Length: 186
Ligand SMILES: [Ca+2]
Figure 1 (tube, rainbow, N blue to C red):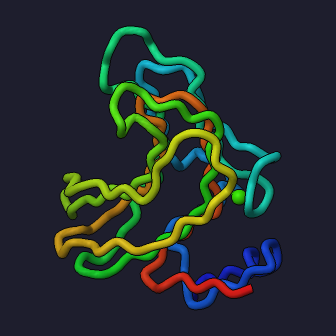
Figure 2 (cartoon, helix red, strand yellow; figure 1 turned 180 degrees about the vertical axis):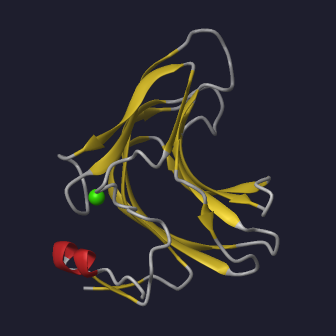
């Protein structure tokens, strides 16, 4: 049985057609316990936010308030989804909402907010990461959509949110990953 986005239709007045979300609870309505939180050499957190959201009752907020002073390129705060089974050699479509507040770049130009898809083979070996969005400064909610061509040996993906050696806050909500194009009509 395919899940159709009845909730999205009601809440956002938005109709999603023919897109089944292979990421369970991409809107963080049931929390973040299934996600993997990693914190290295920074002060910060990942928390559910009931005030600022685009779908349902809550979104996820990542915030870094302070970095350690000693130079280390591994300073980061990130939250990664559980591994999701996919079929190699196919297209994976994505859609998500992202907002930023006072995201300040670290030393390198990639030390910003980054949203990525990580691709793994059947043995769990990481093939590569694909950046889906990034940014710095303060940016109101924006929807990002697109597709990733999965290599033939790709068996799993994870969706990852990251503040990489950067301070500030980001919010993400309404993540959809689908084997079919995500069509949206008002
Ligand atoms: Ca939500």
